[in-house]
Image (cartoon, rainbow, N blue to C red; front, side):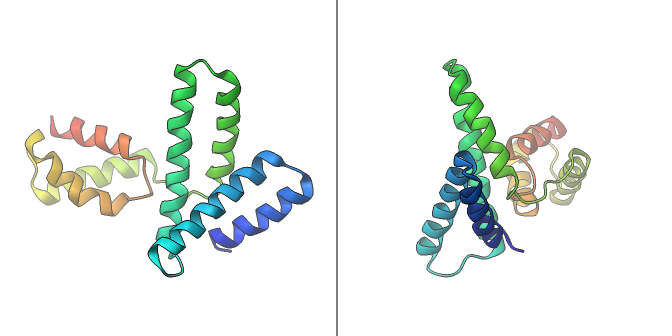
Length: 147
């Protein structure tokens, strides 16, 4: 079952179970998918669906950080619960060891030797791991390997 079908099935389940939190999150993701479909003008590919889900996840993580800074514990708990729902639709993430290996291989591949080559490394690296690893962690690993 693809992600879009899973979202529709989970929406029906949440409606029947009167699970407002899950229903709201699933509806938001479904709306994001529909908006993206209209924007690109064709049925979404698996990669495009993953991009939309990753965007929803990133938005919630950013909101979570802001709520923590503002000492809004009620919103922190709600956003954490939303993140758990979104996580069900996320693409399989690479392990830390796999990411480290890909980073080191890419650095060798492009012949990077200093921090000046950071952009070249990231340009070659991101298409390989897009959606499969956290960009912030990858950024940090590249910086560590180039220093």
